[in-house]
Image 1: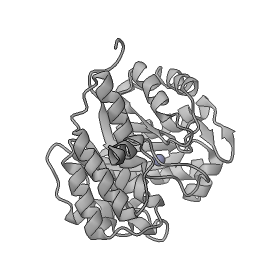
Image 2 (image 1 turned 30 degrees about the vertical axis):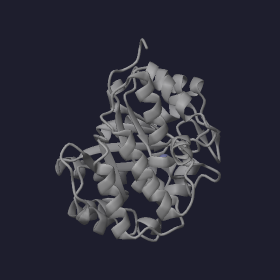
Image 3 (image 1 turned 60 degrees about the vertical axis):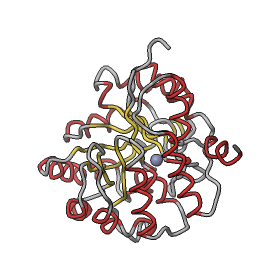
Image 4 (image 1 turned 45 degrees about the vertical axis):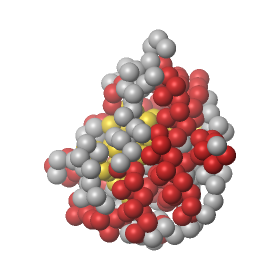
Length: 300
Ligand SMILES: [Zn+2]
C-alpha cells in the first residue's frame, strides 16, 4: 500500500504496562521465563518492569530481581519505567538499556498518578533524564492522556505540545504519546500529530494506544499513513490503568502484527512466538486475554 513505512519498531510493554494492572501475582520465575520467551520473538524492545515504589505497584515489586535474572538477547533493547532518582539507581544496578520517565498532559491525571502538579514534576524528571543520559541510556518520555483524560475530558494539543517540549528540552530521545484510556479516534490522532510535526521529528514519536473502544488498530493505521514507525503494545492485549477507571489493556501485539504482516510492513517479529508468549501469560493469569488473534488461535 502506498504511503506506508517499510519497517516498524515495536516495543513490548506487557511485562510493565500489562502486568502492573493485574491482580494475579506472577512469580519472579514466571516473569523471567516469560520475558525470555519475549526476547526470542524478534521484538525490538521490551519494557521489562517498573522501578516505582513497590507499594505503588505491588505486581512489579520484584523489578530488581527480574532485571538481574533475565537473559538478555543482543539486538533487543531492555528498558524499564523510572519515576525518580532512587528508581534510576535501582534500575541501573539491575541493568537497563533504556529508561522511561512519565508524566501526564492532564493536570488532574498527573496529580492522581504522580501526586504532583505538572510543574512540580519537571524538575524531578529533568534530573532523572540527565543522570540516565550520563549513564549512556536511551531515554523515553511517556506523556499520558494526550487525547482524552478521565477527569478533564478532551486535552488540547497545546497542552500536549507544552509537556513534550519540556521533555525534549530536558534531553529525552523519544516521546511516547499515550492514549491512556483508549478513547481516541483517527481524527484526534491526525490533529495531534499535525500539531506536533512542526516541532518534533517523526522518528522521535512513539504512539501508545489502549484499546478500550476497539479503535487502536484504526489509530495505528492513521499514524502509519502519517509516517510514524514506532508503537507500544502488549502481547494478548494485557493491561489497563489504575488511575484511569474503565481503561482497557494496550493494543495487542498480536493484532498489530496481524495488521503489519498483512500490509507487508516489516517488524522482524515471529508471529507464532508472540502467540506462544500470549498463551503462556494467559495461562499464568488464568483468564482469556482480549486479543482477537489469541482467541483465533485457541479456536483454530
Ligand atoms: Zn499504557
